[in-house]
Image: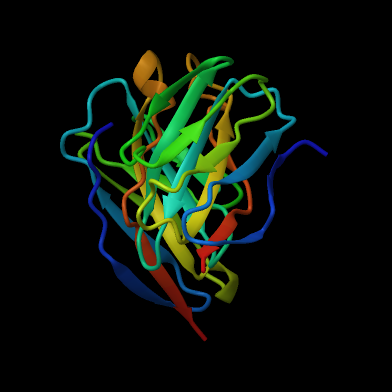
Length: 113
Length: 116
């Protein structure tokens, strides 16, 4: 899997949009970008994933640059419950490599009242 | 309800003893994973299994062993050879390869192992 780079921490005011960046400059053509988050002492939770196009679901939006070397996860209206560590992962979607799910240290997002 | 279950939630073991952590899923997923997490750190992959009776070492397999005799179960044994076993252990499962849709992984709630 491609190595991803994320800032170690970020703050966001409650009710504002939280924009979490991820750099994946060595991503290959068959690798998707996945985002998970982990609330303290719980298992990580899937948020969203995408390949080329921007994606949106009930939790968040994912913006992937045209060259696919970076992406941004957007939480449109952050709440205190969004305080968590957010992980960005680049993962093969086919072949043996698709089974290996590699996490980095993520970004600790703190939502401030 | 479908899900992935880890037990126990907290586990204490004496130094030098082997201990087995349980992971069960009823999601009919092909792939299962074990991760270790230390305070302030990300998840590090210990072992993963793509299919029954097959498993692969991850980045930190030394001192650990696994088995995959059934699709639903992927127990992890922390052996006495693991020098620093105190950590938070997470199990996950995913549908597997092929299609991007629905390939996200689902995690259990973790087992916190403390060596005393």
